Image 1 (tube, rainbow, N blue to C red):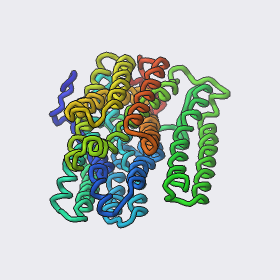
Image 2: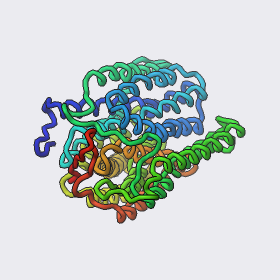
Image 3: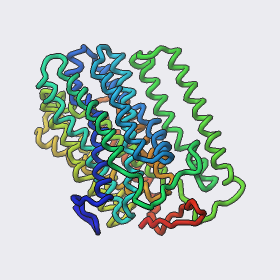
Length: 488
């Protein structure tokens, strides 16, 4: 796949940066979902219940919600190189914790902490946007996200084989431990292999790390509204873990968590006001304005696209196994077809977005994924297996191409805030995953897929409010002069 001056196999500095980046994201996904294809073996080894297994699925994506916000801020402040390297090295620790866990509580804690590695995606979005121009950015970000996301499919294919090769009740432990070793080593490889920006380029940093900057009073209130689902998803998770759910935490502790979440939201309101209080007294120069409405629309779309992907790749092996009576290894191989589409569909979504426009591409792809999940809701044991797999792959094309199109637009909003915007949009993907997996714990598979289809349709309606990126965005250089960065 190529575009103007875009040669995927070349070893120019920008292409080497892209390759280092997607491999880092690949490894983060490989580690993040190393448990999914092994759930049957883990459950059998430790006698876990169905409710406990589903709780692990939710815990795996929970911490990524605040983690993506935090990592977005850290990336903007300290640069992608240091941030990604430390993330890969540190997250090897909970990976090893999960590999040696003997109780559900130990597994739950390790899985919760491992959700932090899912924030790695945000780092690469900022890094790639520093190296590629707007007319190549969708394709570059699509390759980064698509080839990186394939880490989950690679895990689904290889980890059950590794576990069976070691054999016995501990085979799954060796398989998961190996992923931690890979993450630890690559953290050092990445640090010595990349630069934050091309030689001589300026790395623009946000004015404040306390809260996201906005440029109008209306955008300030919209920012506060868009923060609510992030806290709501954490409250939902807290409820799921309380005695009202799986009783992993006590009633008293769950009440304390609710109070902490309320306090944190109040703090977010205060911090956002402190950073943006000037918009209430003076108008921002039009050249420095950006529309937060763009961020809000992309958040909703990523809720439906990446949120559904996270949920589906977590449950699809069990879905195929239970629906068609397959053994877990074979079911895992079939389920990998869903994530396998990432290799081409996400880059293709970015490329189409570069060529035909961000909004038009998102309208077509969002409509397609809504229809795709509606079809998956009809799958039952009477379907021919090949037809069910084909339906999953077709659906996944629209899901992952839609993800590529979303993040073809994210870096074109405000360069110095790219990490924070990507962090928020990425976090909405995890909010979607928590919501969808919570729904799954109460309903049948068919209803689960139907709920995703309906939420995608809501995202399609939201696209009415999106504006096509045009012209350029302005950033202030260290010497006080203004640099205009083209967005189309």
